[in-house]
Length: 315
Image 1 (spheres, one colour):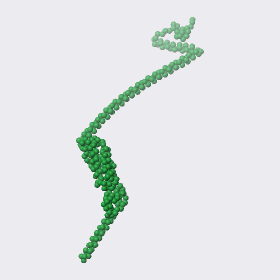
Image 2 (cartoon, rainbow, N blue to C red):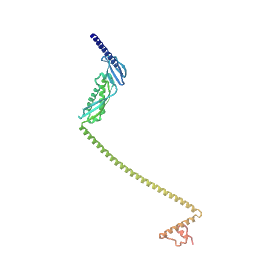
Image 3 (spheres, rainbow, N blue to C red):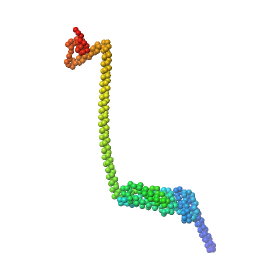
Image 4 (cartoon, one colour):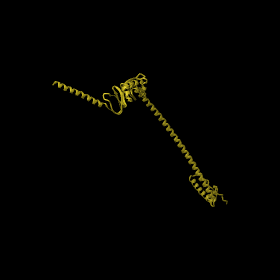
């Protein structure tokens, strides 16, 4: 009876062992099926030796023989560079941190060329930053960020060829000097700002004075030009008036001469002049002026002869 029990226990143990082996085989079979996502690469080893690199898509491996040793992400990634202390050329201690943008270009070199390319890139960026800042004065470190970044990218690119990575850019996030240096820099900036404000104000006052003088100058010129033009216009108008009067007078004399030469024209002229003369005499008498008159006012011919308008009649 005990022998039958032992056989039964042995059969159960064998079944359990075979079941475990079968389950393990099924698990390995499922694990040998690889679905590689986009922008990823799987590095496959066969019996501990590099075999091939799997790109995006469906792949099947040999169970118990092939295995995925490394999974490399081909997308661009960022790596923060921790803050570190650096000494500038003028021996000022500053704290610098930054960020690196890299991507894997060769999955095989990234897997077997270096243990951890992220840590290596970060360390190389720190050492290169320290060496570059050591060649610059403190003031230039704030101005030459592009120079520092370009130098770090150049060094990382050369090293990245062996690591299977590409460094796209390196950006410095902060350059922090000591508190005393920051206070001195703030005072310098404030003084420079005040100097620029004073200079700008003086330039504004100078320009204002120039503008006012230019305005007065133009105003004086405009007034003189206007006065000149007024006088010219007045003179031209006066000349035109004199010419018009002279022309009208000449035309009147010509017309009078033509009338006099006609029949009865002499008598009409004498009558008109006599009338004007009497009016003139009347005005002179009102003004209490002395007037020389002919002895006989009733002698019209003698009166006209006195005026020079007719010959005296003989008695």
